Each structure stands twice: as C-alpha cells, then as structure tokens.
Image (cartoon, rainbow, N blue to C red; front, side, top):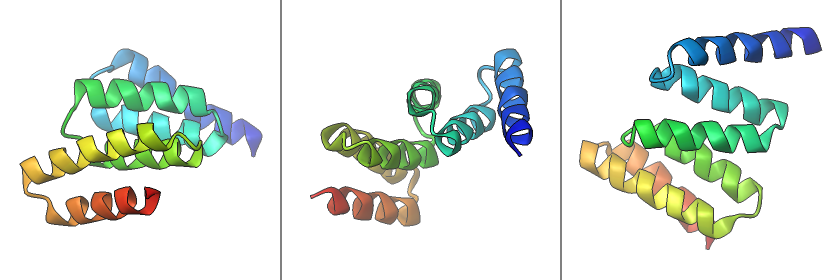
Length: 107
C-alpha cells in the first residue's frame, strides 16, 4: 500500500512539474500531501495554488482546515476569510456558507 501512495504522489509531483499552472493538479498534490501527513509540503502547495489561482475556493477551505488542524488559528482565519471573499466574488453562496461556518468554528 505504501508503494501505491508514494507512486500516486510521485505521479502528481511529476505532472505538476510539467504543468505548474494546472490548478486541479496542484490541489490534488496538496491534498495527497495532507493525506500522507506531509503538512509542510501541503502548506507550500496550497500557498502556490492560491497565489496562482486566487479564486480556487476549495483550496482556501482545505488550506484553512489544515491550518486549523495544526493549531494555527489566526492563519486559518485569514485563509478562510480570503476564501469567503473569493466565494462571494463568484456568487457561490454554498461555498460562502461553508467557509463562514469554518470561520465561526474557530471562535
């Protein structure tokens, strides 16, 4: 099973290296890093994702969730608030509601 996991991450890393602007691939790689417990790499990939794709609302949610899990509450609040703003810009009320709930859960 470990080989499958590392193989999946390796494939994602190779794809992202060739297609650094592919938001979905970068998000997938960040989520794979979260799954593996490589939080530093996950935070790096979420940061790169959101820098290049500031309207990738799901990225804000997952990034904020990871920060909260790591007890980085103020960072989580900041990231989730940025995601809420992005969701509101896009008129995505469902995502905005989820982000608001995530922010409220930090209080």
